[in-house]
Image 1 (cartoon, rainbow, N blue to C red):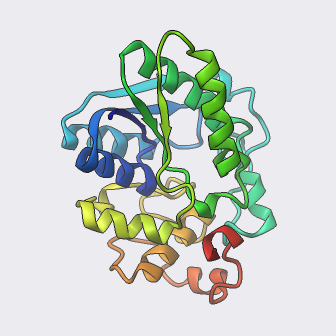
Image 2 (image 1 turned 60 degrees about the horizontal axis):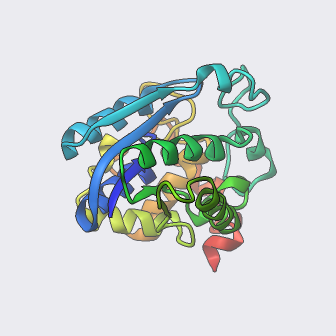
Length: 239
């Protein structure tokens, strides 16, 4: 499949880019500037495209993001610390973000005659983010089948949607993903904070996968307390 990967520059999407480059035909990486509180991850997405020798498309949807208020990722709201499965993590939801980005991605893929759009949503996202769940992926595919009927046939490829982040780390280790050249932290400091939901999930994933984590964290121990020996791991991950 000639595949366009939606790539934020984070661990999941960069791993997916390497996965597609290994198993399919990687046609390019697509990133979005939606007015997120920092843009460090976008530099890692550009670097991944250069490393994989494919085009990098960066689309500015900041004017749209400016109206999707109420999220700690776009507004002047403190990013909560803790595990993703805690209620406080709902502060990181950007309403309809994936639906907006994927609609644009499908348009680009159709215009370029590509076969698929790949997205790195995974089981650990299900608890907090409704547009990362299997039902959303299936429904979005149905919608796009109608939207592009008679013009193009583009598949939504989401290989991790029923898998855990630890599974992604394992896949990344197998496909040569340079984990140190990815960015997850929501706070955007000089190093990963080690305390926000995505840092905790990242650190936990390496631990569960049994793979050394090359990431530099400002707080390297907080994840143990936040994970509570698996107490907060979402049902989709346990399953």
